[in-house]
Length: 276
Image (cartoon, rainbow, N blue to C red; front, side, top):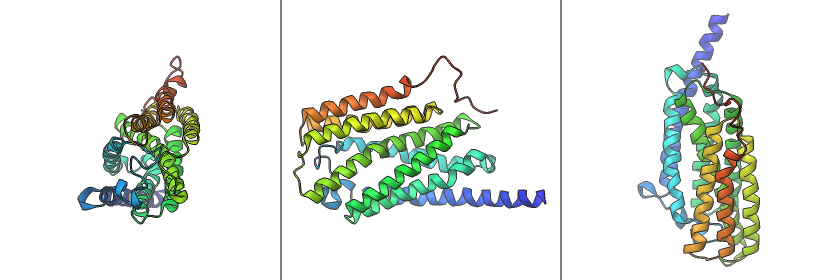
């Protein structure tokens, strides 16, 4: 009986590995095309420019989107590593495979929805994406990897993904609201600054919640600091200009960067020790 159970489990593992690998390739290629590669329409030009760098006070400057190259590379690396024969029965990879694939599918779906100009639907999709990434982060915090490679392709990649998606959600909601109201790009300066205060609090909450995996916590903090920093840069050097939003975004970026270190107790043994 146990032999049969082991055989079934092994088959399920191999199917999961293959589907996640192939699905990841399709999702990444589709997302890249939808973001402007291979002749696709760049996100900033879709939906009548609602997500362009100058569309709202909380839109990051265009340079911010370079982080996607790093995230896609990390997701590709994860897909390859989880497909290795040695990872087939790894409990951590078993728990991560399907949720990570779901996150990639949701990201591709978000791009497709944006291309169709459905801004409020895109808000629902990106909220679902963040929820899935939070679930993945909880799995990472609750489990220990078998190698530093696994930590790099899973914890670091998901941290960057979660951090950037969090900032992108704020920008997405703002874009949908501004477009729906037909407001000017520089409307609601006080509200934008207040939202950034809330984002700063969220960065601290994420840092504390992910402190069980220091690489995850640092990566998410860096990604949020990156996105917030580009918002600050956009309000200082681009349009619409706003010194208040620039300072609010800059300070929020500092909180995001510092929070993972502030919540970590360096005097105690690290919970990030790799399992033998």
